[in-house]
Image 1: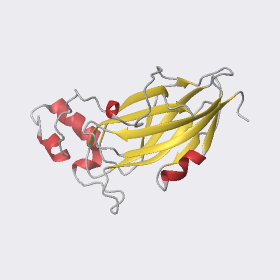
Image 2: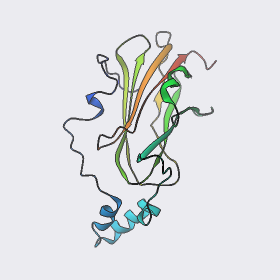
Image 3: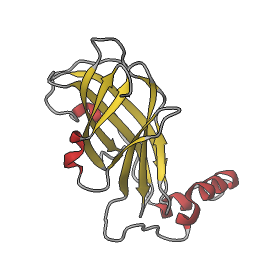
Image 4: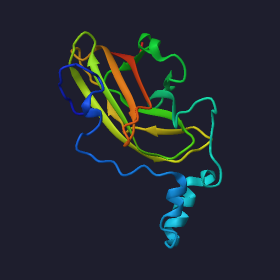
Length: 203
């Protein structure tokens, strides 16, 4: 797992989700991005390739949803096994009742599936804090800079680097996880809680 940090459990997504000293660059629309640096041919071609259809049309996947980022799914990815998935598109209040079983010591990755619509989003970030069930301190924290994404009609995704599940009798048990998908502009696109259990084997 990621480097261990221990904090008093006050709010699972408190001030350390965003660096108080970090100043994000000004938020720009697609039109502003395309209008800048027009004399730089290589940069212009890069922006055209990055933005795709969003240069010429407003990409709206769900007209009834005003959000720019719609988080659809979280998956635990383990080589050689089917992905274990959480549907984040509906009622997320019951997700903690779905318990992922993870074999101790296994290498796994977290995949986030999401849609970007309406405008480009800058500096997406995934923050995950893990707590041992019944123990009010953080036993593990990971922060991943996901990047900037243009609107697309297709689902986009981010896959974290591999993490190693803890192993040994002391590490076995149930863990609760608080996750947040945010960005440089401090928009909280989604916060959710989920649960996994470390076992000696998959069964």
